[in-house]
Length: 119
Image 1 (cartoon, helix red, strand yellow):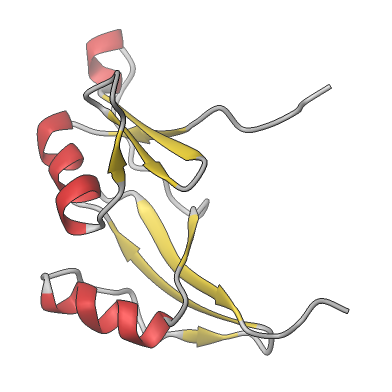
Image 2 (spheres, rainbow, N blue to C red):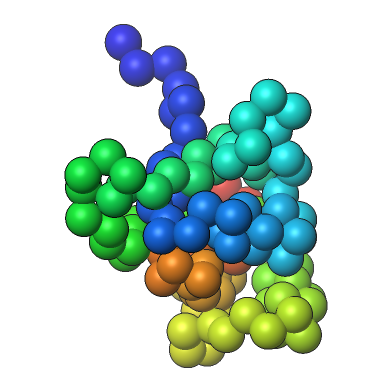
């Protein structure tokens, strides 16, 4: 029945600021048809302002979109140089590296790389 994820909603109180972060800081691809949609590969991040729909703003917590990078340490260093602060040390689960951070609205994100082969 479910065939794909259409988009990941990114709640924001300032869509322009959030858009700048996702496009200019993280380097996601701007959607050609929608100002507040940007893409990581085939995944759309749709920035929206819940309060404009009468819904209280709350940042997305503990559902980290895992943004694939080839080298978590190198990507982390590059993003730290751009002012991104990470939440704790890079995690090594025994199969992957993960580094958690937030966007300017407090939404959780993660840099991720699986280094162990699937069995």
